[in-house]
Picture 1 (tube, rainbow, N blue to C red):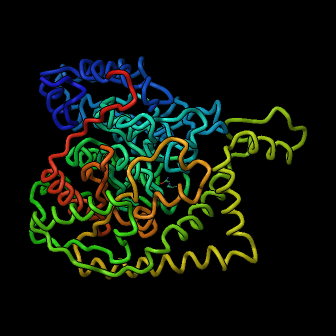
Picture 2: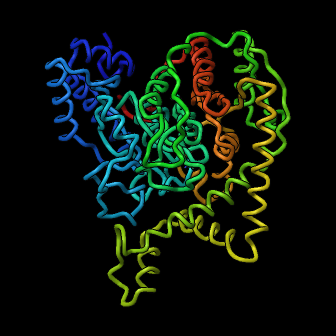
Picture 3: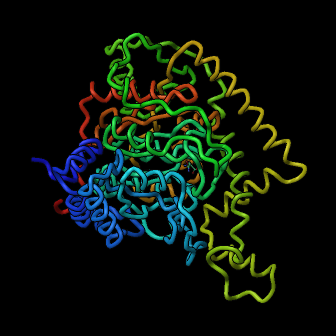
Length: 492
Ligand code: GLN
């Protein structure tokens, strides 16, 4: 008999709804597992121990009274710490939000609560979601459960590590340039960046508003699909949330990929990747062919500019979005200042970490008069070309496949002094954000060191169902089980 924390999201909710097990028992199992692994990985900034127990007990009471509590009945979930929950701190991994308490709840979180989920804590992240290793958190470093000397990826390192370690079966993060898919890849779990607009951003602290999307992490494709199902859909509080109907993601998910055309982008050249990544990528393509998919080679030249374009657009938007953290309206206020200009200067100097400052400066520069056309304007031009080229690619193919990341998990400290090397972690994930496409990261095996590698599948806008179906076929063929070894720990 597996422990309750090992059950899938689907199984957990089904058993809780049938009253074979209580939400409280599931929660206790997850809290016990968390107590065991958390000292090793540091995935959480706060665990809602008391409140989650109260909520699980309430769900059990409602079920006992014959109420339908929803498709995530009793499922413990972790939330990246940029998702607002009324009455709770939300720090975005930053000191600048010290003391801030959220006055409202994010739509995605509201929907999780309506579906019967039990939030268990605020998970660690790179400050303001800027980073690829979780090392930019102002509070703590999160470690990768596969090897404690390596990073979990970022910026949603906490939610990814929590799921990989078995603390929760489902967690939620945000993806602006790869922040769900890249940590999912490094932690050997499934991560989904939905189509832009599929999920309301209301209550997600903004990084780059035209790129940000909330999405799930889970141990299996089906569980990730269920997680997205619950949070997807229109929202009157977010004008960019699409009114497109939400498909039933589980309905055709087992149908396989036979006959589907999967595009492979010529400009993503595996020989440029590390040896294991290239070999794993070729093996993934063989698997897809074996499953009956037809591989189509395509040219999308603009993807080579994706990182450059992303770092102009994302930093420009961030410099505007982060202007609100001025020491007056939210969180931290410097005690040093004696006039308004100093108050802004001191509060921001003390409150923001070095990477956030770098991004604000880059973005302010890219938007400044005399440079706007040369940087921001030009980046928008390349982005339009990328949209056009990817649109054409999706006429020749139903889905696209790429590796998710250019390497497996790297060592803590390895890239902290080399921002460009860190930025390149997202070389394959940024095109989906820039063009709004949905993407999923699905485990594709391990490298010679036993660390996870990952396949990325991109779909047409709002074709999450097609993307899930292909990822599920691939996962079944892989027979992947998320079982990190906590290398470097005494015993787990
Ligand atoms: N790693 C990328 C960055 O640092 C992407 C971050 C994200 O998706 N939030 O900007």
